[in-house]
Structure formats: structure tokens, C-alpha cells
Length: 113
Length: 115
Figure 1: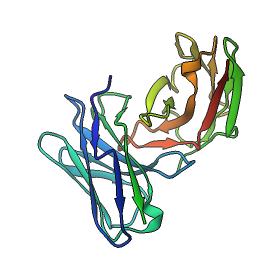
Figure 2 (figure 1 turned 90 degrees about the vertical axis):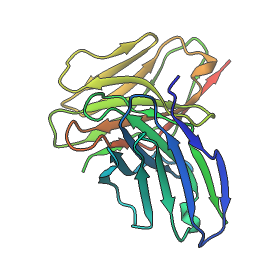
Figure 3 (figure 1 turned 60 degrees about the vertical axis):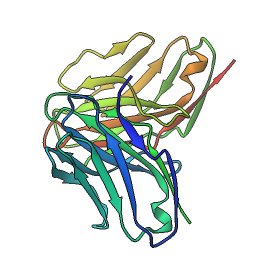
Figure 4 (figure 1 turned 90 degrees about the horizontal axis):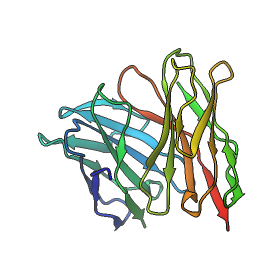
């Protein structure tokens, strides 16, 4: 049992709106990574946060932004939502350079209409 | 940039039989990690097995084992004695030991277990 929790589980937003997704890391983990999984695809890396700083970013526009808090929980913010942003958003926590294993949450299903 | 390819969108196997899922990858690095993740309908990614590239011995976890061919850049997953609970999407993933801990995933294989 991994202990990584994400909220909400499902969300419907209108194009142009803004959304915030939340992730609570597994206890003892200091790194959070976010992934976007479009329907029928593998997850794509959005960015990673380590000790409250962004530590790497995938090929996503600046309207995808994030935060990591002192307790290592994290938020993913997406501004100016587009229809193509509809996807499953996965959060994974790990110990930076201390583990080869990332533990995933159950994801947030975002639908943009 | 590294890439991961899974050429089997769907596979099926009879319960109690053995099935092999294929994965190839491309990288210029000599050291790296490879993973198989399972994603059931609950959507949560669950680690099935991992392999460090510097280890020649193939990883094994109970009914799950891999065939790691470094020169061929191939990393297949064998599931023995398939069970109904094995039905899921299976993703192969690559991770570099350098920089951040980004995982690069393949497109997945949907495994169906036939009772």
C-alpha cells in the first residue's frame, strides 16, 4: 500500500478555466513528479519537485505550473484549460537519489468541456 | 532522449498459462533502470518488477520475471501461471540514473486473462 493520495478523483472543467490538483506524498518521500496520461497512452512527464523547487520539466507549456510545500505535498495548476488537457493526471512520490522506485497515487481524471 | 516502445497493444492468455509482453528501448546511456508497471482499472500504477542495467542477472518477483537483453535493448516481461487478477494495462518504463527521476513510459499493453 503506497500512501500517495490525490484529490479530487474526478473533475469536469470548462475550456479556459483554471484547475488545481493536489497530491499528498508517501511519508518520508521528498520528491514529487507529475504525469499526464491521455486516453490510450502511457504517462508523460510534466515536471518534478524536490525540496520545494522545480527539478526538471517535460515538454509542457508554462500554463502548467506546480508547487511543493514544506510537508512535501504538491499541487499541479493548469491555466487556460484546453480540450486536449483532458486526461488522467498522476502524481508519484519518491526519495530523491535514494530509491529507484516511485509510488503512484490513483490519479485525477480531468475532463475539459 | 530515451524512447520506450511496446509493440503489442493487446495480449490475451488463458488462466494458468504463461504470457510474455515485449518492450524495446533506445538510449545512449550505459547505466539505467527499467521497470514494468501494472495499471488496473483502479488507475493506480503498481510496480511489478525492476531491473538495473548493470546487473546481468534477470530480475524475478514470484510469478513475474524479465528477459533483459542489454545489447538488443530489449526488456520483456514473462508472467507465469496467469491469474484473473493479472488483467490490466502493463507499461514498460525507463529511468536514467542521472538528473531527475523522470520515468519514460511506453504506450502500454492491455492484458486479458481468459478463464
